[in-house]
Amino acid sequence: MLTFNGRVFPGTTPMVARRGERVRIRIGNLSATDHHPIHVHGHSVEVVATDGGDVPAAGRWPETTVLVPTGSVRVLEFVADHPGDWAVHCHMTHHTMNQMG
Image (cartoon, rainbow, N blue to C red; front, side):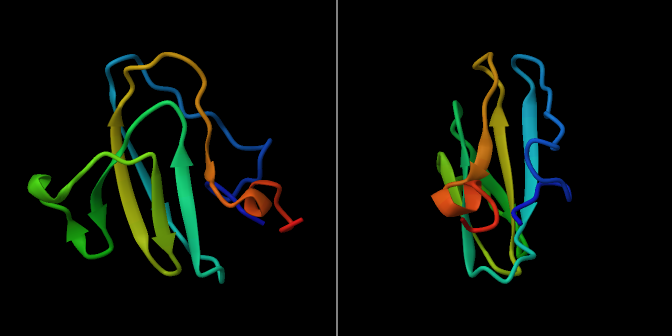
C-alpha cells in the first residue's frame, strides 16, 4: 500500500497552507519498490535536501515530479501561490490505485 504519513487515501489528512506560504514536504521511500516518482499538481517544486544533506541553491531547479529511490529521502519546497486543492501522489498509475491493481 502506498501511504502518506502512514495513511492510505482517502484517509489522508489534507495539508493546508496559506497563499504565499513556503511549504516543505519530506518524502522517504521506505518501500521495497525501487522508486516512486512523486508528483505535485499545480506547483513547481525544488529539491532542497536529500538524505545526503542540503542541496545548494545553485544546484536546484523547478520540477513537478521528483524521483524518490528506495531508502532515500527527498525534501521538496514550493510557495503556495496557486489557490485550490492540489493532489500529491506517486505518478505510477498502478501505485495511485494501491494494491498495485
